[in-house]
Image (cartoon, rainbow, N blue to C red; front, side, top):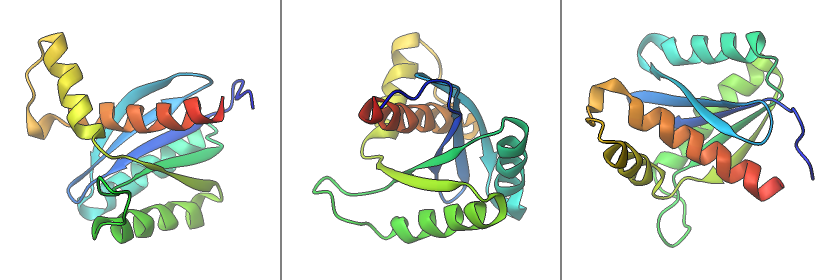
Length: 138
């Protein structure tokens, strides 16, 4: 299936922050990281969905190394379900196993400092999650 210029948003949903990536075709790009407190992330993502005419939400599902659900899976589903209800787009889940570790490795290879508060890891992890989805569809 050729994804053409379809617009996707990828999420790495954590307890404190949500990493966001977008795609307008074959490649995912880190976009931003938003705080979960006071629904900041929810509002920002809903605005982005509208502004960018996003067609589908892709979220990382925190499965363990044996592909089993973890306690965080329900948190991710609840967050995404709220977005789906308010935006009327669909969600697909992708195994996010090791995406944050891979994102840290990318930053280290670039020689960038990895500051937890900056959210760079979260946005890159979201891009990796979204790229996994795109690659699987192509």
